[in-house]
Image (cartoon, rainbow, N blue to C red):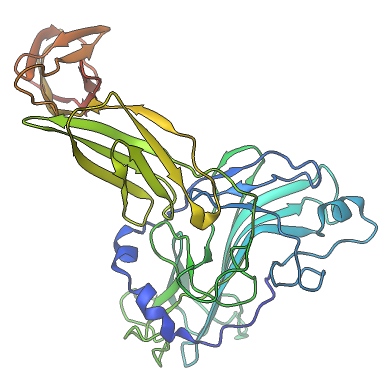
Length: 448
């Protein structure tokens, strides 16, 4: 699978700003992929009708091509197999794509590299010729690197990081090897449900960088462009290298083409991206917390997750602030605490409609300060001690906190409780407030 595109001409001086992002360095883990949702079976081609990532970007298999033969813009796919009913109905041949992106890096010098990273959500067949009943869908992450010097090569990409050790660049007859790094991760998925894969969320052209993506698409499949979509802000590919001792830098970028000040690291923020947006979808919204606090006055704290480009509002509460990674928050003082808060979200940037209103009860926040037990004797007899507080600290009308244990609720007195003579202990204690809040904490057990 190769997207037909122009090779990267090492215009990598653009890379340094994105590649040196502090957020990208502090938030990325080895695997940051997020789940996606595969839609129901499309009655025409037999694959999922849509794939929708955690940002709410919903794509259909793209069969739009400038020449009708599967060449971008805007999309790449195998051309229709003439006379094949399945292929003619679906609009593509052996393979088509919901999402496809490439990133290429090539350098010069004694330790030169030539790298290609392919990222895709693909529709294909288990048979060589397209046939109904043989549909096979999968996500793909492929890393291929030709190297000239043995070493340890680390590849950082939008959803994670991989490390490769190359011990030799020639075979036992001193003939040059190729594709010393050749790693493909394909993860199959089926229609109609939440799925995990090797890529996601889908990369898409950065709206802050000209030109804009063609209407109805996330890219044109041919033009190198900055992107957004990495769940940890790593919207680039970066390769670093050392010799086999793991510490001595390897000069894979002797001219510092990307301007990052290092000859052993090179980054590229420019991708070719293709994908066709599905008709308007619903903005995903998850309310992760809705708490009130009360002392001399009262206030509410609201928390939610939604696509990073979404707008989230609450009534009461107003517009929630976003950190740009999909987390939303607002804290506001109120004259009185409501019983519920109505959450809404919309995402015009992705062409998605508003989420259904979620009416969420407001509760206090219960914080369990301590949870411990001391056990002694034979058979063991344990004394359990807990302490907890509520965010409702009003002088009058404050809620009652109770320990839930063995089907009963025992009230705390002045925020504390001790129970003796227990032969069986819970793994964690749970404190419930009469104002609706619940808090838990693992139990620490001390034997005497």
